Length: 294
Image (cartoon, rainbow, N blue to C red; front, side):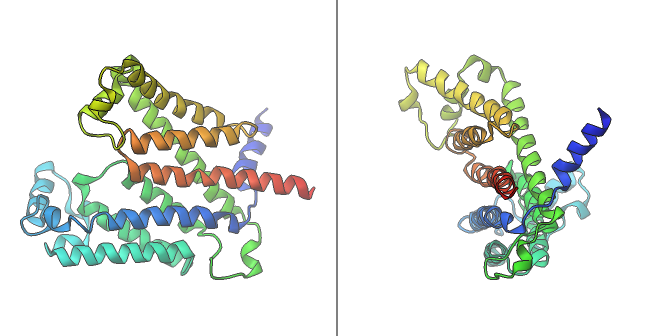
C-alpha cells in the first residue's frame, strides 16, 4: 500500500513532460500580468501622486501605524511621489511581461518580472486583492521552467524534462487550492447558503454584469445565479481532479472563472485563473500523446 502511494506520488510530480507544453500557459499568464501592470497607469496620480490617497507619506504612516517592518515593504516606488515614475515603472513591467510571454531571456527575464511584481505589490499593498498573491505564485513557478521560446525552434526545447512536469503540477495544485479557498470563503457566509449573495454583490456595486434594476423582483434569478456560482466551483474542483472527467472539469472551471469575473467583479483574477486551466488541458494532451506513442 505504501509503495503504491509512493509510486503514484513520484509519477504525479516527477514524470518527464515536454517544455513546449508550457508555452501557451506562459503566454496566457504573462499577458494577464501585462494587463495588471497597465491597469495602474490611468489613475497613478489619484492614488500615488503627491496628493494621492496612498502617497508615500500616507503609506509610510500607515505602515508605522500597523507595525510593519520597513524591510518587508521594499520597493523603489516608495522613493518618490512622481506620477511619471510610477507610470514608467508600470509600463516597463508590462513590456517585460510581453518579453517573458515570448520566452525571451528564460529564467532571467522571469526572475526580473517576479521582482517587478513584488515591488509594485509592496507599493499598492492596501489596494491588493486576490490576484496579487496568485501572480507572485504563478510567475515564481515559471522561473523553475519557463518553457519553450516562441522565437526559437531548437529541438532541445522539445526534450521531455522533470522540471516541466513539476511546474505543470504546481499550477494545477495551486489553482485547485485557490478555487477551494474561494468556495470555503463563500460557504462561510450565510448569504451564499440562503441564495441572495448575488443581490448583495449587485447592491454594493461589486458586480460587472448585474444591477439592481436587472435583479429587482426576480428572486428565482438571484437564487439561481448564487447557487450556480457555488455549484460550478464545487463541480470544477471535483471533476478536474479525475483524469476521465477532466475535460468536463475544465468546462466547469471556465464557468466558475466567468462567474468570478463578471458577477463577483474580480475580472483580472478570473482571467488569471482561467489562463491556468491550460495546465490541466496540456496534461490531457500529454497523456493522449504518450498513449498513442505506445
